Length: 215
Image (tube, rainbow, N blue to C red; front, top):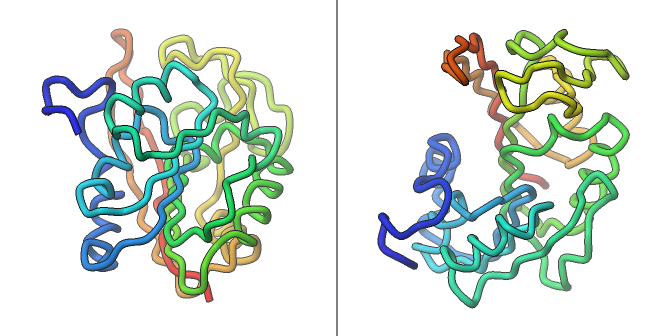
């Protein structure tokens, strides 16, 4: 991997991805990790440091080009529009599934397709990490509602004007992950923080982090 100043895009993994990694003992073993919406690979870089096999699925070819630079030649990079379903991920089962920045951009039906398809690829005891937006997030209600809690955003201050966002209740997200991914005994952590974007106070940013293993 390149030196820190030479990394393209985000330099560090999501702090809750790192918490999950160490709290669940993933630094003490290795396997295959797949990240849906992995971008330039900042989360996968943590797994790379511990010898995991890496797969990054993202819509943006430019982001994947940076991921190649950041993660090296052995990472598997797949360009795909996940709103159209899960692409071919190869034959190897998935030992860790990361979905830290995707579900909010999928409709409820699209999310169901991706999650149920991913469940069939998980190895027994696989770990899952999900982070997405809650209904008390700043963006919820700003724009045109296209489905329950799903909005075509009118928030140029966040750089998301015109994008679809689906906002979850904490109970609804956990229920979906249990029923569609097969999580058992999930851990759910609420994350709320303020941010300034384009000179506007965006408060709160409200996410739920859910992690756990499958049967």
